[in-house]
Amino acid sequence: MAVYTPVSAEVLAEFLARYDVGELVSAKGIAEGVENTNYLVDTTTGRFILTLYEKRVDGGDLPYFMALLDHLAARGNPVPPAIKDRSGTAIQTLEGRPACLIKFLSGVSVSHPTSAQARAAGVAMADMHAALADFPETRANSMGVETWSPLFERCGRSLDTIAPGLYDDLGFAIDRVVGAWPQAMLDTVTIHADLFPDNVLMRGDAVSGLIDFYFACTDLRVYDLAIMHSAWAFDATGAHYDAAIGDALTAGYEQRFPLSSVEQAAFPTLASGACVRFALSRAWDWLNTPADALVTRKDPLAYVRRLSHYAPELAKRTR
Ligand SMILES: Nc1ncnc2c1ncn2[C@@H]1O[C@H](COP(=O)(O)OP(=O)(O)O)[C@@H](O)[C@H]1O
Ligand SMILES: N[C@@H](CCOP(=O)(O)O)C(=O)O
Image (cartoon, rainbow, N blue to C red; front, top):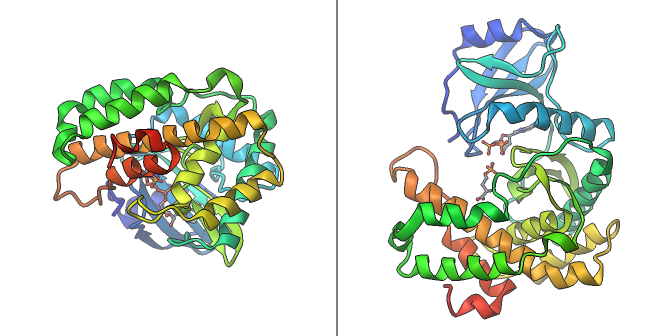
């Protein structure tokens, strides 16, 4: 579930009165998602998403995210900008939380993408990177390479309660990946940094929406592709790589941004970095979310296992 902050019909109707969006017809909490509270809101003029930003999104970052969405939407990318109220304000406060009313995009996120869908998603990422070439704002990656060792140490030996030996194995992988990180050799641009299948809406084989930009930041362009590749091209256990999906995704991306030999050589390190980054954030959540919480915890080991594909030399230390 992802309704951390309840909003009553009365409070929502009053909130919507700030906008030219008609009157409230219905509102339902959206179960998908883990970070924020999301409601599907129907009014007499249309459908919207109401998002209340919970603890992981810093309200101070919202102007950056909203400027990014406006920039992409203005260039024809299928992203949902925030709706502005009558005074031109997009970022509001509701029930003590930062909140935005957001354009609803049709489509569904697919659990098991086909090659055609993976290819279309790769094209959509490339289109997004092209459109962001002249986006002037920057934001440091809050889950970037320099944050991994500190987060790892904060998890500490408790990692071994997730799987025996995980502290040593993940520590070994982090040292190797951080030591090989190709920061200075590659383009740094604005990236999505979390373009998992659940953040891509599709209608058939066409991408109808890219959502959830709340990790967007300034980082290596091909790292964004590596994150996407690691998220799309494996089964849920992380043990089985699907080359058809991985290849289709990359081929779609390369229609616009063919990978240079330097980028190709760096790709396994970038993808291993993605494995480390998501293994760590999932492990932190695993250790800090009560087992009976309403949020479904995501399996950190599914990301540790992916390392065996990208970095076989680390495989003997990972499971
Ligand atoms: N603009 C949108 N249009 C349509 N559906 C959306 C939109 N934004 C979010 N959703 C729906 O809400 C769900 C959760 O959104 P998401 O941004 O991924 O939440 P979280 O940040 O909590 O992970 C998505 O899986 C999707 O079903
Ligand atoms: N994609 C991340 C978690 C971030 O959750 P999201 O619902 O905001 O995409 C993961 O799978 O670990």
